[in-house]
Amino acid sequence: MARTARKVDSLADEEGMDEAMGVVLARADEQGTVEWADVRGDLTSGQWGRLIQTGILVDAGSADGFVLDDPEAVREAVGDGTAGSAAAAGSTAESPSAPSPSESADTGDSADDAEDTSWSTYDKAAAVGSIGMFAGYTFAPVRNVIGGSLDLFLGPLGELLPFYIVVLVLAMFTGLWSTLLQANLMNTEKMGEYQQMFKEQFRPMVWIMLFTIPVFLWMYWKIGARGGVSHGLGDALVVLPFVGEVGWTAGILGPIQAWIIWYFLCSMGFTQIIRKSLNIQTTPTG
Image (tube, rainbow, N blue to C red; front, side):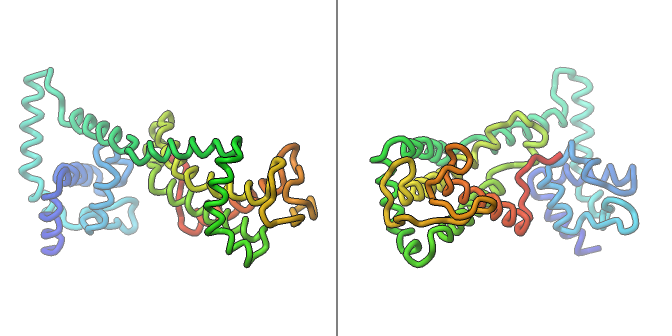
C-alpha cells in the first residue's frame, strides 16, 4: 500500500489528475466499483488510462469494473482538492453568474478538442501539394516529371520483378502508409461524439494522397495509360480474377483499366490485413 500511496502522491502533482482521482473516489464510495462509463463525462480517456497504468485503479476481479487499490491514500491526496472544490461550489451558489467547475472543465475540454483537430502548417502544405499533383492526371508534362523522378527509385525494382508484383508491393506500402496515418491523426472517440467533424477525417487524407498520388502517377506513366507512351513494359499482360489474361490498359469495368483494378484489389486486401494485424481502428467509436 505504501508503494501505491507514493504513486498517488506523484500522480496528484500532474495537472488535472487530483480532480480526476477525486471523481473516481466519489464514484467508488457510492458504487463500490468504477467503470469508464461512470466517469467519462468528467475524465478524459488519457486520465482514465493513467489511473489504470499506474495501478491506482485495479481490476475488481469477480465484479465488473475497477476498484481503487488504496482508497485512503487517494482520499488523503485529494483531500485539499475536494475541500477546494466544495469551497468553489459554495461561492458558485452565492454568485449565479460564475461558471461551475464542471462548466469550466467542459470549456477547457472543448478548447483542447479544437486545438487537437486544427490543421498545422505542414497539414496545409500537404493539402496544397496533393491538390497540385492532381494536375498530373491531365497534363502530360507534370506526369512525366513525377513519373520520371519516381522511376529513379522504382525502376530498378521493376527490372527485378514482374510488373504485377511491383504493383502489389506498392499497394502494400500505400496501404500501410494510409493505415498508420489514420491511426495517428484521427481521433476515433471525437469522431464518435461529433460525426460532423469532417476535418478529423480529412486531415490524414491529405498526407495519404501526398504519398499515393505520385505512386499512382508513376504507374500511369510506366504503363502509358490513356494513350500515353509505355516506358519499358511493352505488351506485358496480367491475369485478373474472373477476367483472365488481359493487357494492362484493357478496359475491365467500363473505362476502368486493368492496372487500376489490380492496384485497388491489392491495396484493399493489404490494408485490411495490416489493420487487423496492428489492431488499428479507423472508424468512429461510441
